[in-house]
Length: 197
Image (tube, rainbow, N blue to C red; front, side, top):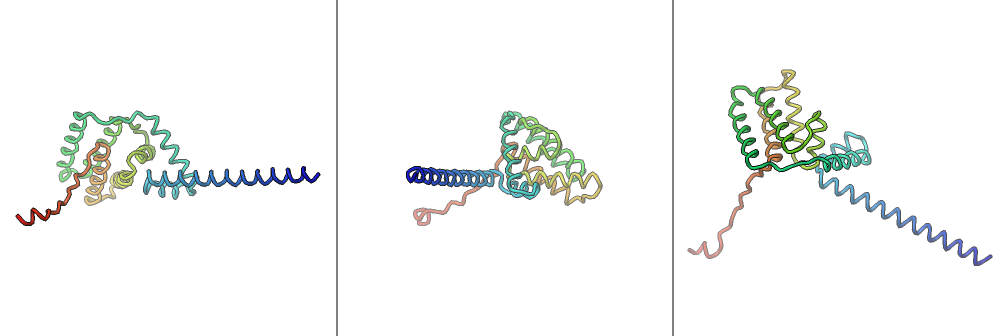
């Protein structure tokens, strides 16, 4: 009976140790997933968790977005299409002084057209913003801010400065979707030999 009792205790200890290791592995995996999502989505991570009320629900939503966007056929623009869109944006900006409200509406339409050309669905705004957040998390806040001004403008509540700001927000998203990166100029320090010449 002593050997059977000892074997039972050994089995129980092994089961407890295995359960502890499994729990630690699951905890470590979940922590890594949270860190990965935080890195990928940036501020959108916190916004989604706040909006849905829990980390579990927020992270589930962000993972669902990733899976949905993975199934999309997101394409880079051909150089000719990029040039066409850039020209359309320049033309739009020139008209701002004469028709700020109209230009904001046109900026929204141009962004939607660019999204469609790249392969994003353009259903309702929240869906567009969610899809954009997967590959363009740094500019999705710009999109939301611009859309808020559009809604205020439709009610006649947005002044010219707000409309100008909306165009700036749309431009940030537009450039990111188009693939334009601001040129970062490096400051080159003169070498010792250049100083002596």
